Structures are given as structure tokens and as C-alpha cells.
Image (cartoon, rainbow, N blue to C red; front, top):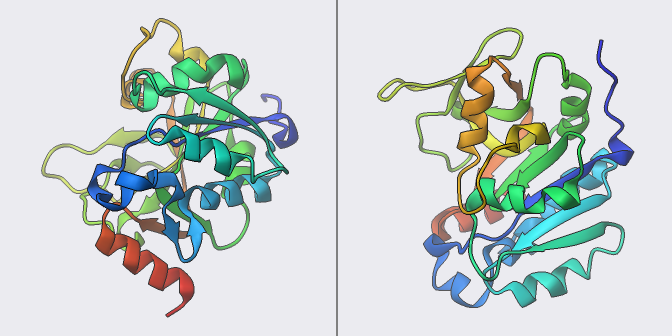
Length: 242
């Protein structure tokens, strides 16, 4: 049996470098992670997950309107935040994490997408992921939400999941019951051999899947899409309880 992960010692990265083009003109003056949803910056919902889980060491990347990201990070004194600067070139999800690896360390770490909202209905999902992690059998653990209850989601899902939690991708034209929430736990060793520059984290997932080491955990709670102005308004209304 592998050694349990100690949440207090773990690190996490919040991906906050995207341009948020579908939310223009709002994101012409405000970076998407700082767009207000029910009166709060979108990225603060990611900090909620980390706070409840007891994770304090956080890396945040920046690109679009980066100075505003710096200012907002200064308003989170309870976290130890390092900034990974991508202002010269946007690196996509995988390239962004690869650049930040020196700040994330050699142990498994969480990565959260700042452009969606994940809210737990009971126990901390990140705590549950840390408890489920088994280095002997997995390199990637994705938090998945049922497509039928995802708010504002109109896709066909991303994955099928068997009883132990092993994942397989859906095939074109065949809907899958689970979609990826944007929260994940990764083994940094998977990034060995990846070239510098932009690439998607899907490359990492496929690398793990090829070895049978891509796993998932079902999320209990709410997942809300905020990629358009309409979705943003609907999410705000939902979170306000109106």
C-alpha cells in the first residue's frame, strides 16, 4: 500500500492564463478569472476548494491582463502564492503546468481550472482525491461530474469510468456519462520528455491512459459552466439561490 498524501504539504496550481475570448467584451478589460460570478471573482471559487482541503501552497499562472492577477493574488494572504509568468507566450494547459513544475515540486499536485465553478455538497472533493490516490496504480486522477446534472453543459461527456475508477475516453458520436470538472491530481513524472512550449494536458491524460494509469473520481455537488455571458448570468442566479 502506498503512503497517503499529506494535504498540508501538498501544492496546487490554478490555471488562470486564458484569454476568455467567449466572454468579450467583458474580458477586454477584466481577465476571465476575475470576472464576477454572484459577486465574487471566478478564481475565488477555486481558492474555496483549496481552503477547505487545507492546501495553502498555490501556483497561479498569468498571461492576459496579468497585472490584475497580481493585485488579486495579494488579496489572498492565507495562501502562499507563487506566480508563473506566461505574459511573453501563452503555453496552454500542459505547457503552463510544465513551466511551473519547479514551483510545484516532485510529489503529486493538484491542478484546478479557474474558468469553471466546482462546489462540493459534502466532504471535500480534494480531500477525497488525496485519499483515493494510489501511486502504485495511477498517474492521473480526474474529478468527474455526471453530464446529466452539470449546469450549463451541453457537450456529450468526456469519459467512461469502470468500478475501480479506471477511465476510457468516449468515441466520436457516442455520449459518455461523465465530464471532466477541471480538478485533477497529477504525477509530475508524466511531464518527463515533454518539450517546452504550448501543449494540452490531454497529452498527459493519453500518456497515462496508454499505461492503464488514468483514473477518475465522481464529484458530488455542483458544476457550473461560465464560458459565455448567458452562462455567467445563469450561474450567478443559481449561486444566489434565485
